[in-house]
Image 1 (cartoon, rainbow, N blue to C red):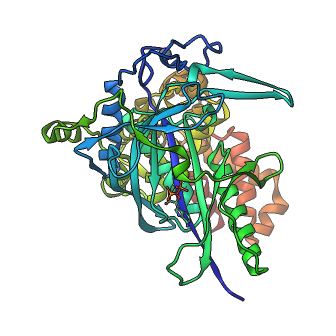
Image 2 (image 1 turned 180 degrees about the horizontal axis):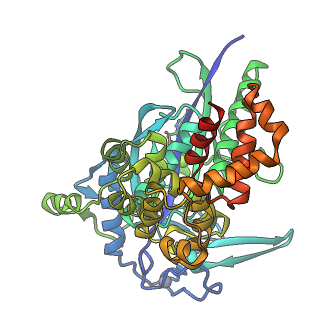
Length: 476
Ligand code: ADP
Ligand code: MG
Ligand code: ZN
C-alpha cells in the first residue's frame, strides 16, 4: 500500500494592537456595541480617502524582522476586488505579489527534541472586513466595527509535516507577536486566525499534492484536530483511487469533522491592481536597522538562554517562555533562589495550575516572584516540609501573604526536634505491636505505615527524613 506524507502551509491573520484603524481614526476596542466604531472611510462610502496608520506599518516591519524576513525597500498597497456584504467598498486594501512588507523569513520550532525551520513566504499588511452573523436561515446581521481594522497576514512555506509541527509553529508565532506587543494573540476573540493548507503526497515524492484550505479553527486544539482529520480523509480518498479537489473546507467543532465550504477563487478573479489612493511605502535602510535594534529578546532566544543559564529541560524552558510576563516572573524568582529547577516546578505545576483553574493571568498572581522564593527558602531550611508548603502556597495564592507569616501564624513549623519525634514514634510502636513485629520480620512496606502514623499525629509537621532515620535506628 502506498504510504502518504502530509504537507502543510499556514496562513495566519493577526489583528494589530493599534489604537485606531488602518485607514481612518476609528477606535479598535474589542467588544463595543455593533456599528458604533465606524465612519465614512471604514464604511466604504464614496468620496473618502484612506490615510495609512503609521503605527500599523511599524508593527508589521517589526514582526517581519522578528520573523527573519527581508524588508521590501518599496512596498505597495493593492486593491483586491470582490463583493460581499462584509466588504462595503467592494475591494479590500491588501498587498500582493513580490513586494509585501516582509518576505523570505523563517521561524524555528522544536518538536520532540528536533529543531526545524519553517519558511515564511510573506508578511503583509491589509485591512479586516466587517463581521457577519447568520442569525437565522433568512436573516444575517453585520457589525462594521471590525471593518478597516489593521490586519497582518503571515504566510508560511509548505514546510510543515504534521499536526504537532503546525501547533508548534502557531505557538511560536503567537509568542513572537505577543512578545512584540503587536497582537494580543487571542484566538477565541478572533485576533489571531489561522488557515492551514493541507495536502498529502506519496512518501519520498517531491511534487506537491492538491491542497485544501481549512477555515473556522478557533483554538490550537481545533487546528491540530482539523489537520489530522484532513490528512486522514485525503489519504483514504487517494488510496481508493479518488482525487483531492482544491477547495476551502471548514472545521465543524461540534461534529469534529471537516466539511466542504466553497470552491477556491482563482487569483485573477480578484483583479488586483495598485491602489491609486495610496503612495508606495519606501523604507529607509537606517530606519529598518533602528527597528531591528529595538526588538526585545524573542521567545526562542529566551528559551535557549533559560536552558543554558538555568539548566532547565527544553520542555520547562518552552512553557516558561510562552509569554513575556511568565518568563519575567520565572526569572525574577530564579534570581532569588538557587535551585532554578525547583522554581520551574513550582511555577509550572502549582502556580500555573491554580491560575488556570481560576482563569487568571500570571500578571494577576497574588504571589510575587519574591514570595515564591521565600517559600522555597523555608523548604530548603527545613522549616516546613514539601507537603505543608503546598498548604501554605494555597493560602499565599488566596491572600498574597508571605510564606513566613502564614507558617508563623498557623504554627506550621516542621518538627525537626529528634527527641519529640522519637517520643511520638515510640508511642506509635507501642500502640501497634503486630505491625512492628511484621516490620522487624522484614515486611518493608510497613515503613510507610509508621511514617504515615507519625505524620498523622504531628499533622504533617514531622520532618520525614528524621522519622525515617529514627525508624532505621530502632530496627537495628
Ligand atoms: P493560494 O493562492 O491558494 O492561497 P498559495 O500558493 O498562496 O495558495 O499558498 C497558500 C498557503 O498554502 C501557503 O502557506 C503555502 O505554503 C501553502 N501551500 C501551497 N501549496 C500547498 C500544497 N500543495 N500543500 C500544502 N500547502 C500548500
Ligand atoms: Mg490563500
Ligand atoms: Zn472609520
